[in-house]
Image (tube, rainbow, N blue to C red; front, side, top):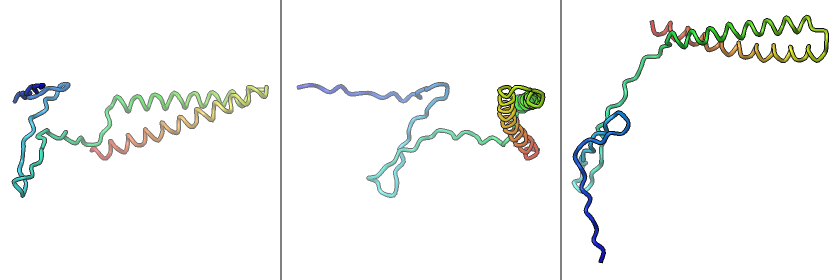
Amino acid sequence: MVKKKSVKRSSKKRVVGKKPIRKIKRVSGKSKNLSRAVKLAKMPAMKKPGVGNKKFNIVLKNLILFLVLFALSMIFYNFSKDVIYEQLFFLLSLLFGFVSIAFLIALLIFVILRMIKK
């Protein structure tokens, strides 16, 4: 016969990462036969919507960069004589235009979130 080893559980809190996990407490329901486990962990506090200055500055710098690239590609598109260069600068201006619109939308969202926060 094989003897089963009994496993003893410690009553100490286990630590996973940096946050301790609390011990599970047994709570009896309406019936004494049924019991359910309830974890006593804290819920994280909800943050108010807001935008940090760092993210706002990154979006603003990227918007300015892609607007300048869009303007340069449009200038080169207008002054290019060869068909290949003309098509290349047209595609580049189209690409930079869409990216700059995306950053403009992100910047507007950040401005709206700042107005809501105040």
